[in-house]
Length: 427
Image (cartoon, rainbow, N blue to C red; front, top):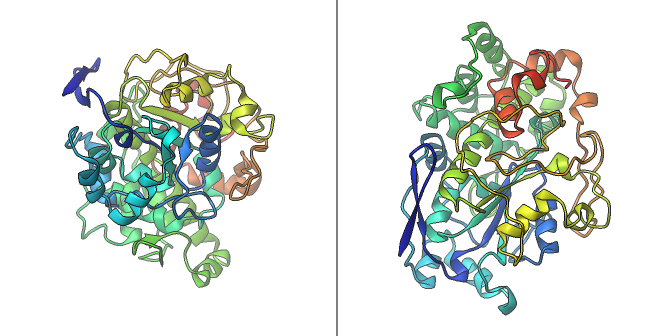
């Protein structure tokens, strides 16, 4: 039995009326390096069992995966395509639809009895952000925590997870209209995205005038990139991750190539807008999506991020609501789903939630350091690194790299006035 939710813009998203526990995981995803480990620690502090099936040093579990098809997911996100919803799949049928049924059965079978409740179990894997449409077919009542980090910080280390970021960018280029054979090479995809505008695929209150000179400068920045960025083959047979050491040595000795890679990272980050908008439309309208904004969590007191924020934090309240805890103070959701601008906020960094979830706790400045958990597999992230690691000249040049600024504005609930001068990276 399915129920239908009507959004304020007339769009209808189908939801299952009820789901079994195994149809209702909590999935943690986001850009690699965006703070998914901190989000996982917070959820564990709230009592959620996150799978340890074949986890790596970062706590990522690849046992439960849908088909990893970058272009299919990107098209669904950009086109806001809902896809099929199967509410009556048996457990065996659902497992058979995963990428590796044997590993998926082992992971689901390993969920403790006490956690066999809706949203009391799940797993973390950053690139799940690119499999949500396929995952929702298998797990129709899944809820999703999306980690966000300022893209400029990610750009300070452009070779980190570069293979996957290049895959993402190519998928976005095809979803924006590039012919697959034309954008088969990384340089061609990056050059194509230099010419694209977020406003061309989504109505957005702040209209940017057409400025071909910016697109031209952007194409000049990515021109030094190799036609195809080398990838490493990862477990599961797909390519991504850090590039080979030989390529990284070459980048270290070439400032133009490094700048081009930083430009690629910034343009690829625009995909976060489309992922979050899709999740806001098609996952459960009340508690299906929470944005875990890393900068808001930086410097939280205590041994763990969750305990440091305290039970009164709006973000923790949202996570409690997401995992279905009794007496959780669930935020009222107005179900806005587009890129509508929020009222002006004086807060800095990514500290306010999108989709009308309300602000997070004020938190420290974005240049502070995460003092979160220090258990094995966790790490400390520094925020605001771009201020010291990117020269003023590089900052000015990277402003031309697509619509990352508009994407950042949308996901941090900012208006143009909050951003200050157009060419300034300081706030």
